[in-house]
Length: 335
Image (cartoon, rainbow, N blue to C red; front, top):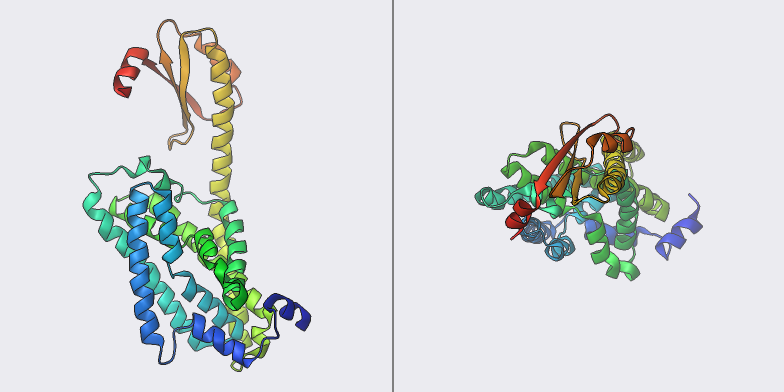
């Protein structure tokens, strides 16, 4: 490795003392392990609780607050650091902590949401729904955020950026979302939220281990097992490639739905021009390949054949369903 690159990234040449500082920061070992574990799980339970109620309350501010205090990034970066120095024992211990954190966060979300299943409808909560269908954009964002997280933790002079990185990587809210959705017996969307978390998890492992290597920690470490490092990086790369398949599929569906919504919206507005009806909504995100167009008004509806002619080729093989809502019923329900 070019030492000038490592010095440029880290600020100073990485030596044994710097390796020890990072071990103390991101690993759970030695005499301080018990105290660090108590602090870690205490903060994690608080963060998971805040995230759960923030998600159910559809509050962006509360969810962001949970992200800031959540410590879950620490053991994941710890696994990446263990990979970079080839320390199998550090990898094992820190991996167990991160897995314990994952299970704890999901359990908190499940337990707190279970008594509320008859009060909320998760399908109507935007903060929950936006975390159920990740795409390739989420993967790209998590890769760069993983680099930022490893970089900030390894350099003392940029540690003040950690709150922003914690917000960007968003580890606890997707897991709390999994618990909430399991409580509501919505297993498909729960898997979508878990996929979002796994995307972030393996992105941190891959980019973190790679960056620590570029910085010089691999060369400076006293205990090194190169085969473990490369196996870990290869597994992380394989998992990210595997994860990218459903992410790409989700991204494609999002693109198709957005295209349908936009094109049908324009066509319906043109079709209704001059009538006493107006477009209420276009819903392409249905599970039965039907695009639902809702219009509200009174009087004679323009010929449906004209609308079908306008949107021909814009539905990507889906069927059109028109729902007409009389004005008096709409305004009555609205009040």
